Image (tube, rainbow, N blue to C red):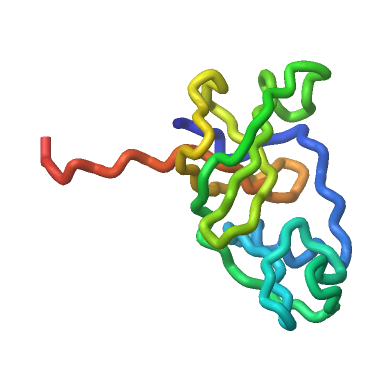
Length: 146
């Protein structure tokens, strides 16, 4: 898959005290989540309190960025700003157990299969933020020189 190094036109995320750590990590090409310091539950999207035990104490953990396609939908109308065609919105179940909503580009949605492996990659936006997206992992090389 080819992908331009920079994209533009997508609506910027709302960045506040609960989400700033996430977007700063994305700019550094890291996928992170909150982890409750009390009960160790991962949570995404970020929020002020743990939905499990209601603790306000949390820490940032780096995620592998690997997971499987849990669900997806294709948004045909209205056109989504920053996308050349229909937007593919995906729910990825990450190896660590939390789910993440993002998108895929440069793929025919008719070829997507629930349960197939995906990996995160990051696309800088002209407007000054970085979008985590998902793609199929690169095919492993056969190890045979040609």
